[in-house]
Image (cartoon, rainbow over all chains, first blue to last red; front, side, top):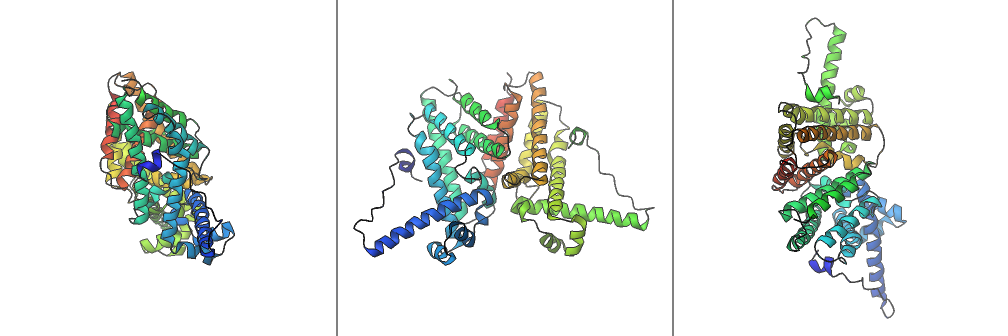
Length: 218
Length: 218
């Protein structure tokens, strides 16, 4: 994602079908169906992995025809890419965008941490963190899907690093290396996601304490 | 695993078939075949997950008959449990047992960290950390396989916590809470495993620095 996506989000343009021609309406319906299917595919992939996606299963889940879904996506790889993109949009909407309302630096890092924990606790996706579920599966499968998941991961680490640098400039940070601290925050949040999925409710607080220790006044 | 397994390991008893009766020899051959298959199953599961295991594929990989493999394990779940057990044995042999030669406390924690990083870098399993690959898959599948994976995770965290407490008694530790520090060490090692699988070679050093910061003199 480009920075503006994260920091200056705008609402989705509402589709206005008022004066549209029949072809436009059909395209809009197609785009809406595509979004619905891709978002459901992200849910399924959070549980069973992107490799577990099948056009037949998605069609059955959503009461659509298999050929209709196949026409919209074309290939399993394009369906996987659409699911990853839908997951990224949902993550931005649930975590990055609301946290961007907090002032940059330490306050925004705390907001990102809380939003991330909520995202893992009351799962946005039924299987918890989408990337925690899918990166381990795709690490040994080079290709566009892996590249997309990696780009998302880099965006997230870059966002953490940027806010950590800002927090350091404000003198509110005990850490010495923003890259290292971003790695640590990402690591404890991901570990909290795993622990939550396994029934360990103490983990989110451990993640919070890690972030607080990093943000203590130098 | 029980503590003695980790801390006072002995060599495997060498099978001596010298005076064995035919039935004993058959049992020994069966036990050896079972071990070979279970260890290969752990390799496969590190890449494709325990849910991806199949008796047919293992038999084909190892040039055995499908019915022979089926007889040895009985069910897919028992095959998965055997694979998890083989993975645990291999992990103990590569990480916990050699690190136990270092003095308890800070030195042993550094040895565990280095052994763990080697385990992830020059993978003991072709897919990297077995638990990082399989815990996310089994978190939403209650049953004996999930229980076994959870037991292994608890053992590992208990080992880290014990050594951290010992390091704190020796005054060599900057952390305040051994449970929290164990969670953090496990989190950065797991994150380093993921990053390595994705081609990021800087991650092991970040894990090392995290451990060193925790072990700095108070």
